[in-house]
Length: 191
Image (tube, rainbow, N blue to C red; front, top):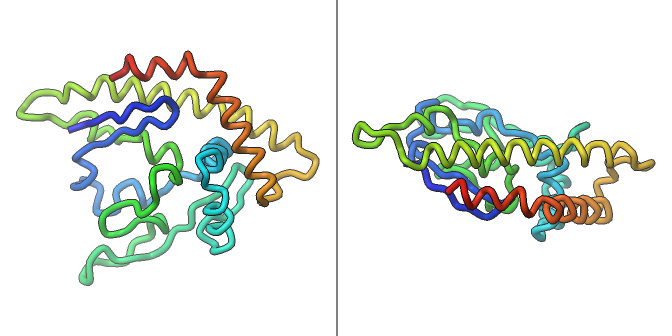
């Protein structure tokens, strides 16, 4: 069953199938997305600057050309299970990071199995709305990330990975989300 938690650019999609993922206990967390420039700006704008700096210092978030890569670690789901590489933030009950600190993709992505799940032989009525929300968020975040990537590349000092840089990214994210209020209002119609 799919549930939408509508909140403009912070919209989240949930599926009961995730708890019994047909791909295995770690599901899509075996290949976590990067925190791109938009994700980093969103996290910073939501008060996560100190958390980002702490996670970079701890080596859980690794600077790469397009933002921050989430470290992958080899862990067991159970004592008898083999070790599998997965996101450093994946725990026995799923993600250990609050939604405000995750990549947006982690908040709005659902796999095709979740969209196609049947309830009592019927298609999940929330599936169509979730697909529309997913498509809109993917398009908006992709556009914002391209714009932020150009702005980061234009900075003479590049990404400095300090408080000032993260504050700048947070302000840029807020500017982009403010300019897209009307477009993001369409998410309310998606539900």
